[in-house]
Image (cartoon, each protein chain N blue to C red):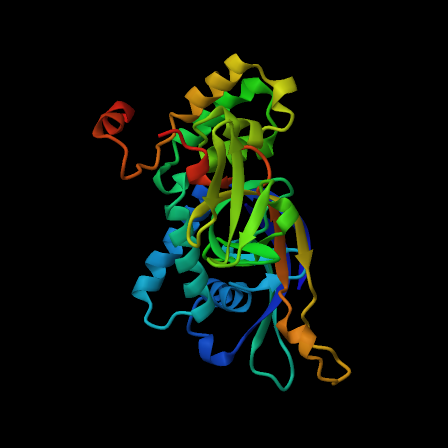
Length: 135
Length: 198
């Protein structure tokens, strides 16, 4: 077995979730499934469904990536923003390296606003008002 | 968190699987071979993403199976350096905190990687962040199963292939093939409940 390209591409959590959902659907039909594949599919789906990726869809992600292109962020930073869906400036400063030098406070607000277009995980204590605002 | 790795391998399809299409047989075999396994210096393989190319299939004398060289891409879990991820606390010991993602359990935070100052509470066997404000010190406990945000700072691959010399070395079989070192010492890292304003 040879590795031809060690990093062919980076995948967002949503893309992996989609692939795993297809596998899960296939596994439901098969009676005899490989133990390892079943385990890893189940555990990874469980983890990903609890992240913001569980609610994302195919259309919103390219829109958000396009909107984020004006800030000079690296691919890795944009990927993390989509996977983690930060809601505070502290989280943005964690994801974007040297954020004080590269982006201003206004830009941080703008980024948060763009990110908030992605669907959010609803926590149990959140009021119903916020759910309606997203629609 | 996840990457696509292009690989090439020769897949052996035994004769009793000749009724299945080559595509299906190869996919099943690739998933059987690599899913949930760690490849040295590559990462934890999750599942097959797609097949890029089939080369010609060969049958060798004395063996009824067909051998096909396949180029394919695999979904691999391998967070990049300085990536921020969320997970759950799996356990605390006096020399580290272990975080788990469900499908991957070997994420270790050494004591220097915790928010400072932190101390280990022996009675509850958990680490505690002694957060200081003007009013005094708040003890923030790092309980098991709490969601945490952490940053990946290092990854360690250990080659766990069996030693060919035949000597039994208990150390090799119990070491973890892929482990990640993380920190939670920056603002925004640590338990999610420490940083939400509610």
